[in-house]
Image 1 (cartoon, rainbow, N blue to C red):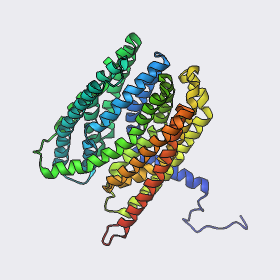
Image 2: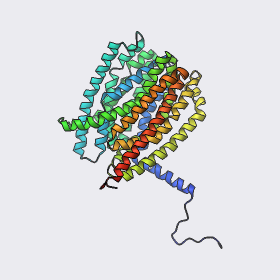
Image 3: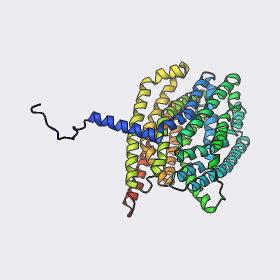
Image 4: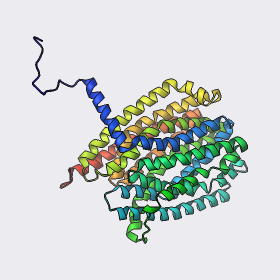
Length: 446
């Protein structure tokens, strides 16, 4: 056509913005599939998602105050289970993901199982003594429930080690397959037990999921276990990294537990805790996808340990794309949340929308900063992550004492939103300093 620009043979026309976006989207989808994100997302959906489905069903069985009691006890039990192995499972994830021999991987796994089990049983014993000696829960059923979760704590802690071992070896499909079986069993048992016997039935069967999961995972990985004589070098390697990593994880997770404990203490209402518990369900549901992305990405990011420029580039890409996806999900919840809460939980939980809105907003700074925290973990700078998490916990607790008496569950959610934003800014800034130092280091591989 006369007047139209002629392209040389073999040349492609200029790429439009829309075609570039489509190409990037296809590349990202292909990368997610090949790295196992869909399988790991299914695994998380079956562990956390079915857990949320279970609680949704329990909402329709229990009264609001009973839901508050269950939330209170399980937040404390899950928090203790996270502490119980002192970070041994995180050390297994890091060191097995690194380029070491197959024999070394099996030795690390076997050592992690043995030492993690001993530590978890010790922590569960300390929990038991504390609950009995301090009379936690008072002269109520809550005290009995806190005693009934004692076996749950070590089982929930130990089961993490075979799961992260599979993750470190990029065996995502196998982990998802076993998780599907165990969580289906858990859903049937816990909902059925609660329907027949109330909260007593729930807590009597709460150990079923981690026990079943642990047995199946140990059978599946039995050929990968190679026990190794404990040495000072290996113990220091595990505990030096794992302990501070555990502190960072626990300090971050403790925010939900601190919010629940403060809410119950300052309001004296199990009903208020129940409303906040629904908000936490929404928060955990929206967090499933970014959590899957981060956990699947870790072994691949570990492969860039000696390439700081590429590591920084991948972290920036992951942070931006994750924030875009999370912002879209949060926007949908803001628009449809009131309707969804009434449909899923019932009209009596309508007030839970406001705390859920603030908690959903807290996912945005999490989405932006969490990849950079993963980068610090890859580089072994767990003390930096711990410091940022400590700032998050201290800020959340201080704001909770101020905002909860004023706004109840919404105040607890607002405290977490503000604290999460401050922690995200701090984590991002510190990660930039650490990575900049690695990039400038002479002789570093690029």
